[in-house]
Length: 327
Image 1 (cartoon, rainbow, N blue to C red):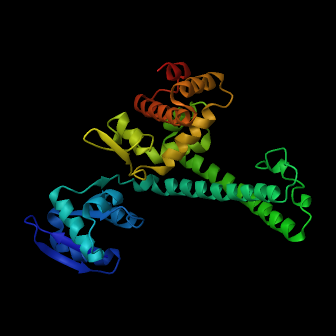
Image 2 (cartoon, rainbow, N blue to C red; image 1 turned 135 degrees about the horizontal axis):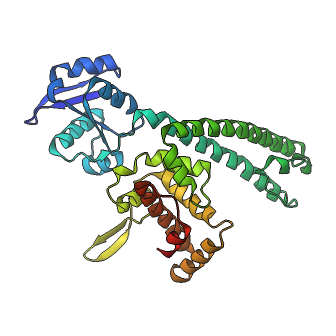
Image 3 (tube, rainbow, N blue to C red; image 1 turned 90 degrees about the vertical axis):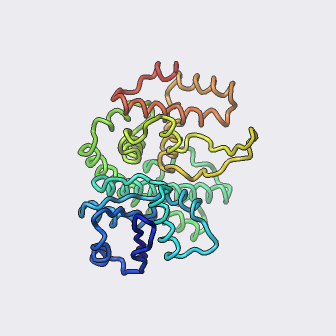
């Protein structure tokens, strides 16, 4: 780990490469601990340094990786150069800060993200079975094979031995994933009821939002108080466009990856599930389609649900269908 420490005048008092361990870090900063502020870039390995600074009473700030790349991008890039520029940005007030997620909830959030990753792998297996069935031009299954009761006898439909074996392997993996995912779901729900049961109950009042979507929203948002305005929240959830404009002319969009991809997925799924068994919701979607087109209707609905979640958590009020559709 490269450490760069600047004094108040901007002079470099320490710029050296150390082994990445707590003892080496504490020994290096010991002469400067009086008014030290530690800044690190938000990459995957910041957990330990944030927790160490919290235990030692050292002020710690986290830098947004994508914004920092835009600020200190240069022809020459290595750890030594980056550490010097990060220190200079911190001293000059140009340090783009990211949210330091509290350690108490961090492990549960990461476990939930892991569960979503495993669920996508399960979906890939189901898609492979469907694609193989179409590849050999066999009759459609007729029922959703996502449910175990509908998966009986699927492998026997394929005549070729190797193809049948491939489908059997997929089915065995899906059965194994089902057990793992259900166990993870129960474990995370127990943790959520301990961490913030009230917010979890509020999120479940939204039509179509089940246990998993409510958990994703709960742990990815953490505290709604960190967003002063609803506009900042929907931007963080990637529910708004990022246009480039100069002299009144728009020239495309960029920076679409800045924000929380997990919240973007959760609100997109919530918009689709909101329409199930909801005649009023379907009528509202048709109204949006007539005005904005079919492609934009679901995006607008996801944005509207995101705004509703913000005010629900701010005001501690459950979801109100009539108020939502009339707004």
